[in-house]
Every structure is written in C-alpha cells, then in structure tokens.
Length: 112
Length: 115
Image (cartoon, rainbow over all chains, first blue to last red; front, side):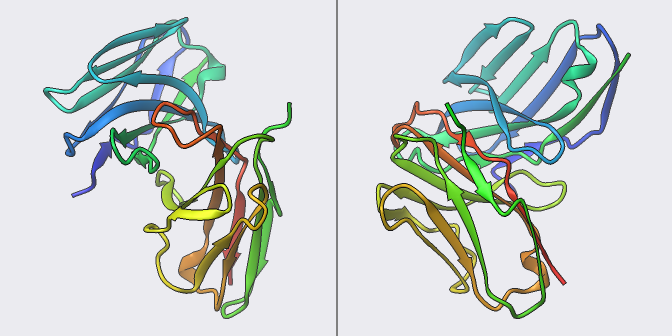
C-alpha cells in the first residue's frame, strides 16, 4: 500500500465550478501537508502549506486537513481555464521532515 | 531572483551509457533534493543534501545512482550503466534550510530517455 493515495482523474469541469481534490494517507506521523500545482513539462509549484488539522484559505484556494480520518482536500472556487494542471498532494513527517511523500497527482481540465 | 535551474532539459541516451544531470539551486539555499517522476506518478524522493554532505540517500534505487554537491551549491546526479527503466523526469528542489516548515522550490526537471 502506498503511503499517500490520490485519485489520478482525469477531472474535467466547466469554468466557474468548484473543484474538490483529495488525498488519503496511512502514516499518522505526517504533520505537514502541501498542495503543488504542476503544469505540463514544468516542475511542481507550491500552492498551499498546512500544519496539522484544520483549514487554510488563500484566495480561491482552501486546503483542509482531517488528521483523524487521514484525509486532506484542496478546494478551488470559481475555477479558471488557467487552473488546468496536475495537482499533487505532498506530506512530510514531523521529526524526519526532509523527505516529501507525494501522491500520484490529479489531472484537472477547466473548460471555458 | 532566479529559480532552480536544471540542465540539460532533455537527455536521450542508450542503454548502458553514463549520464550526468545538473542542478543549480536558488542562491543561499543550503538544502537540495533530487526526485524522480515517472509518467503518471508523483515525484519520488532520491537523495537530500544539507550543505556538501548527503544527509539522506535512502531513496537512491541502487548503486548505479550517485549524487554529489562538492561546494554546497550545484549538484550533479550521476547514473551509471543506464537502463530503460531509468527513463523519467529527474527533478531537483532546494530550500533555505532543512527545517520542517521550509518550502521546497522545484526546478523544471531533466527528461531522461534511455533507448
């Protein structure tokens, strides 16, 4: 079993829709949770960074962590065609925090 | 300022050959990471440097893979006797330090194809 599971999609939504992206994980030692956006043939770009459980909002993006369920989400409001990309969740341990564990990524297309 | 840069952007080689992939981290970043991303997968950790030393090389798949960072800045990932299964995008990332809250900034990657 992979430490981080993510539905690869692909996910296709109309412009303006609310998008929900999710990851589950098995290791309760994960304390830091991140969402990266990756455009085709580019490196991942950090979108959101959260520590432990709770919500964090940044513009149209909201990251949510539920440690009791080992489940994290990224919500995108008012989705735009420029949001079309692959979204990767990533996690790291509290004490050995140097190694990131990534999900497989979800491919998102926002249709104008 | 400039981000993480990687060269070459693409590398095609034949099975059994030796390759070197280069990473230039963001100036002042002491921590440097190498990841491998296969098609349709997320990045997979290979090795992490703090300064000049490899602090964690647990992700290197076998002894054909080796990485150096002799002056604590530029790093080179070296792959000997390449195999077709080594084909992937090799990503480099750097962060200011190795603290748990330090953000890793990724380069564009080197796409390696082994024929």
